[in-house]
Length: 324
Ligand code: NDP
Image: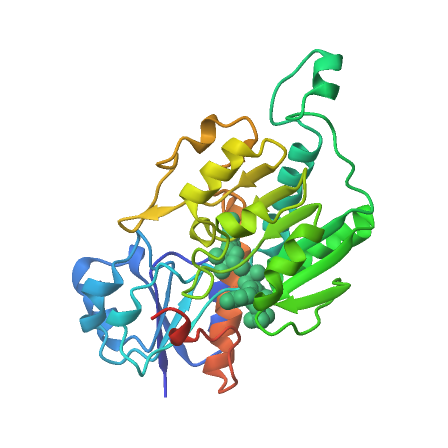
C-alpha cells in the first residue's frame, strides 16, 4: 500500500531523496494549486507541518479523513490545537532537532550576562564595581538545567567540557542523564535552585511546566544567579519575573522565548521587562533562524516519518495528556 505524505512546506532535496526509497507519495502543498491541495489532503496519512502560521490545522483537519500521523518540524508542540485533532491521530514532535544551536545560544546568553556585556559600560572602574556588569566566574560553577533532553543535555555538555561546571539536572522522574552529576525530579526543584550559580531552562511548555518558575522559585535563587530561558516563555510567570528582577538587581536574566497571548508570542512583552538593566532578550532565534538549521530539522523529521513507513516505532511520541 502506498502511504501518502503531505508536507505543508517544501522539503530540502535530500529529504525528498530519502523518501524516494520507500513506497510513498509525497505532496508539498506550496507547489500545488488549490484543488490539488485539497486532493492531497484527502489522501494524507501523514502530515508534516510546523502547524503554525503556514497551515491552519483546525480548519483543515476535516479535509484529512485518512490522517493517522502528525509529525511537526518544531521541537515544541505547545501551539497545536490538541482538542481539534482526532484521538486516532498520533502526534510526533521534532524534539532534539535543535539541540546544538539552542544550547550554543543559551551559553552565549550565559556568558554575556556573566561578563556584564549586556550593558555597554566603557569606564573600567564603573564596569568592575557595578552590580549589573561586574564580571562573574563561570568555571567550576554549579549549573542547574531544567530539562535533561536534547537541549538540556547539550547545555550540560558544553558546561562540563568547556567550563568544568558541576551539573544538576531536573526532569520528570529524576532519572540519570549523560553529562549531569546529579538529576532530580521536578518536585525537588526548590531544593536545587539555591545551589545554582547558573540556571538554564530548556523545558517544553505543557500543563505541568506552565508557570513552574514563579515568585517563590525566583526568590529561592542564590545571590548573583544567572538565569537563561530557551524553552518557552510561559514556563516562567511574567509578572513575577518582572517584580523579582526589579527588586533583586543581583539576578541577571536572559530569555530567547516570550509570553503567548491570544495564540501569539508577543515581543516585546506586556510588562516593561526589556527596560530592566538586569534583563537580556533575543527574539526567539536560538533554534531556527538559519536556513541550514531548519533544513536539518526537516531531514530529522523525515527520518522519523520513515520509521513509521517501515513499520518501526517513531521517536518523540507526544503524550496528549500533558497538554489537554
Ligand atoms: P526533549 O523532549 O528532548 O527534552 C525535554 C526535557 O524536558 C526532558 O528532559 C523532559 O523530561 C523534560 N520535561 C518535560 N516535562 C517536564 C516536567 N513536567 N517536569 C520536568 N521536566 C520535564 O526536548 P528538546 O530538548 O529538544 O526541546 C525542549 C524545548 O525547547 C521544546 O519543547 C521547545 O519548547 C524549546 N525549543 C526552543 C527553541 C528556541 O528557538 N528557543 C528551539 C527548539 C526547542 P523527561 O526526560 O523526564 O521526559
